[in-house]
Length: 350
Figure 1 (cartoon, helix red, strand yellow):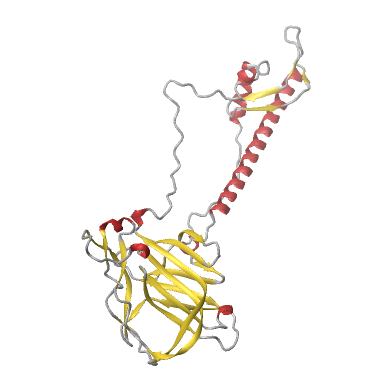
Figure 2 (tube, rainbow, N blue to C red; figure 1 turned 30 degrees about the vertical axis):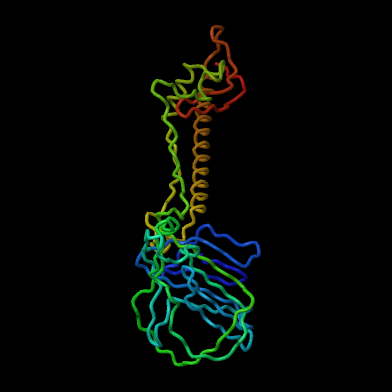
C-alpha cells in the first residue's frame, strides 16, 4: 500500500510492481511520512504519486532526492477550474536530452578504506525522498538536462556500509517521446505540503517483520499416563452397572445412524481463489461441524430411547421376584462415545 498524507499518496514501483511499505511512521506535525522498502540490485524503480484536486488550485512543485542528491522534480501549474478526483505523476529517472532518459537503478554500493579520500556524506544514503510544496511563478527558463553532479556511482567509507549496502545509480539511456517545448516555467518553493521518505535496504537486512512459526505442543513423556477422562466410570460412582451397560452398549452399536451428506466443491476457479476469505470459510466450516454434532447427538438419543422402550417392554411382560427388586434407573453410560445420557427417573418393574 502507498503512503498517504492529506489525500496525497506516494509509493515506489519496482519494474511495474509496487513495493510493500514496512514500519510506516508519521511525524508529529503530520507533514512527513517514512517507511522501509526492499531493494534488489539491478532493478529499476519509479516514484508514483497522486495529487487530489484540492491541492491543484495553486501551483505546486515536487522535488525528488536520492541518496541525498536532488534528482529533479515536476512543476505543476494551478488548475483553471476545480475538478473531481486526483492526478497521478511518475518520476523514473533523469532526462539526458529531449528524447532520452537514464532510469533510477539499485546497485551495490562502492566502498573505500582510504580516510584521506573525500566521499559523500552518508547521512541520507539509502533514502528516496519526495517533497511537495506550494510555489510561486518566477519566470521562464530553458529546459536543462543536466542531472546533479555526483548522483550515482558515489563511493563511501567502509564504515558507512553498515548502514546500507545498496545505492542508486543511473542506468543506460532509453528512448522517450520528444519534448515539444524547450521553454519551461520556473517556480520557487514556499510552504511544504507533504514529504515522503522511503528507506531502501536489501531483504537480508531484516526490514521485513519476522512472523514466528507456531511451535507444536510437546508430546507426553514415555511412561507417563494420559490425564484421566472426566466421563470415566470412576468419575460417577454408584451410577453405572457394568453388566447392564454392557448389554445396552452392544445393542446400541448395532443401530445404524444416518448422517446428512455435506457436499464440498472439489475445485475452485483459479481467479476466485484470491477472493476467498479465510475468516468466512472458517465460520462456515464451524457451522457445518456444529450442525453435524447436533445431528449425531439427536440420533444417539433416539437410539437410546428405542433401547429403553425395549427394556421396559421386556420388564413389563415378566413377574417381579423378591430376589431382584425393582430399581430406579438414573443414567446409562455409553462406553463407545463416553457420553452420559439421562434416560428416565421412573421405576421399571420386572
